[in-house]
Each structure stands twice: as C-alpha cells, then as structure tokens.
Image (spheres, helix red, strand yellow):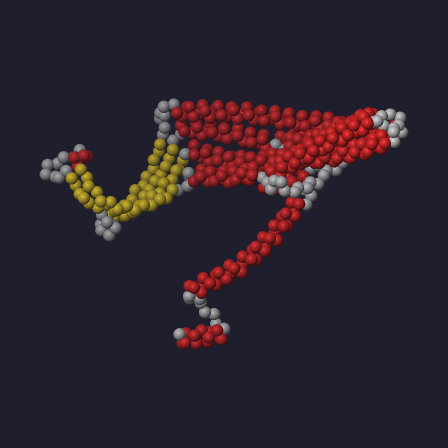
Length: 469
C-alpha cells in the first residue's frame, strides 16, 4: 500500500495524467458531474419559462395568434405527422423494386418413410435415416418488371403530395378558425365596454332622478324607471362577461395554451373600409390558392393511376432469384458449395373475373373523384361570391349603425337636458337610453360582421394565414 501511494504521489507531482482504473472512482466522478450539471439545467429552464410566459402575457396580435396556432395546434401537428407517414409508404413502395437479400442457417436431423413417398423396393427398409442435413445460404430476389407495382410507386408519390396539401389545408383551416375566434373575443370585449358605458350612464341617470325627486321636480316612478334600467344594464354586462369568457376559452384551445390563463389581445384599428378585388380576379386567386381544389384534383390523378394499375394486372411480371450457400451433413463434415439462379415470367390467363371487377371499381372511384372536384370548384366560387357580397353589405351596415348610434346619443343628451329642466319626466330619458344601448350593440355587431366577412373572404381565396385586422 505504501509503494502504491508513493507512485501516485510521484505521478501527481510530475503533472502526468493517469487513468481511473477503479470502477468506483469512475462512478463517483460521473455522479459529481451530473450533480453539477442538473442545477445549471434547472436554472436554464427556470429562465426560459418566464420568457415564454412573458411572450404569452404580452398583447397578442392576430398575426401572432395565427402563427402560434399553426405551430402548436394538435390538428396541424397531426397533419404534419401524416406527411411523415406518406413518405414512409412511398419508401415502402419503392422497396418493391430493390433487391431483397436474406440469409439463413439450418441444421436438421431427418427420417424418411419411403412407403409414404410411393417407393417400395424389395430388400430396402421403408424407413431411411436418421441422417443430418446442414444448410447455410444467401438468397437474392428482385422484381425486374411489374407495371402495377410501378404505378403503385407513382401513386404513393402522389399520396405524399396529397398529404402535404392536407397539411397546408389544416393550417389554413386553423388560421381561419383562429381569426373567427379572435374577432369574437375582440367583439365581446367591445360589448363589455359598451355595456359598462350603458351601466355607468344608467347609474348617472338614476342619481339625477333621485336628485330631481328630492328637489320635488320628479316623482317616485321616475326613480323606479331608472332603477329598472340599472338592473337591466347590470344583467347585460354580466351576460357580456360570460360570452367573453367562453370566447377566450375557445381561442385558448385553438392556440393550444393553458385554458383559463390570462390572455390579452391587441385591438384592431378603427373601422376603415378597404378595396377588394373584382369577382373574376378573386376567383382566379382562389382556384390557384385553395388547397381543397388542389386536393380534389390530386385525388382525380390518383384515381386515374388506380385505373391504370388495375388494368396492368393483365400484363406479365418478370422476377429473378438466386441463392448460394453450403450444404452438408454437419457444419464440419461433407461441405459443398451449392447454388441456384433463374428467372420467372408470370402471365395471368384467367382470374375468375377479379381483374375486371377491380378495373370497374377503379373507374367508379375515378368518376366520383371527378364529381367531387367539380363540386369543390363550385363551392369555391360560392364562397368567393358570398364573402364579397357580405363584405359590401356589412360596410353599409357599419356606416348605418354608426350614424344611428351618434343620433341616439344626441337624442339622449336632449332628453336628459329636458328632464333636468323639468320640462318632461324621465320616461323620455329611459327610452332614449334604451335606444343608445341598442345602437351601441348594433354598431359592435356590425363591426364584428364586417371583420368576419373579411376573414371569410381571406379563407375563400386561400389566404387565411395572411389575414390581418
């Protein structure tokens, strides 16, 4: 022990590195390293988490919401995973034309009953064996020509393109849903603001009615009317808060964030009508951009390949195969190299009508795909025309609602002045207040309808992900 200690001390003094040959020392060193690394990792995670929370807590624009939903929504993630599955199927279809190499080793002990084989020789025992058989062999097989498999490979390639288009479509659909949910949340926030303004106004008018009654100008029924209006507006505010909570939860589910967490949205600018393209231009853009039409057209192409693949079953197939190995009694006795190789040409002659039925089925699916593509094209044209018509109508609705709101507010001011001067009771004030509440609600609804129509138009031309308020 002393000699070993001296050697270690000499090595340490000379500055040489010596290996940790003791397993216990190596294990202890690994534990120390892991212990040092974990706090650093925990600190990094703790620093990254607040940053992510801060990003979510910041005012969220519609573009940010769409980008997050496209990145994190389970539907878009599932569609992206579908692309990986299609690529795997494409590789499997390509593998049908690649060489198939396999190997095997077998050692058997056999007996044979010659009588069971129809052999009966005088003087020769019926039972032969037992004897040993050993075989070690490599086998190679490859399809040289199979037109149906070649078409299946092309079909698998188109399926991959189809899955990619479906992934893009999923992103478009999520973007459209997020836009609608985002507009709904903003609209509910505006309804709450309007409802709160109505409630504040009702309370002010109630205070005015109470003061007027104390001064002997108003009666108790004027106060009762004002109290009823306060209760009504308080109930309307509660309903608006409930609607906002529901809209927030829907948006949070689309964004795939914790439901019930704080979510602040950045409100859109004031109403400003935009210029929109003509119907013909919008239809051209929609037919170029809408993934539904591209999917339908690709399904037609796949169905056409399926018809050709079904007809290819009438064609001959050519396969080649070869094997090489050792054959003997045992691995060490009587070994000889043996091999075989050859080609096989298969020609279908009669299949009982199976091929004809497969061709007829493929033709039927092709017709269905064509009908579906035509229906999708008609649906796209309907979406574009309807969204453009809705946009033009909602622009007029917003203008009319704004004018109605401004007029109702002026009438309320006049009615309140008349009531203050004692020229009338507060029935006129309450009626004017009701008109103001209705006009404010109509204006908020008209704004939401206009933004919804714009979002629908963006989805109709296949640009939901680029839509902004």
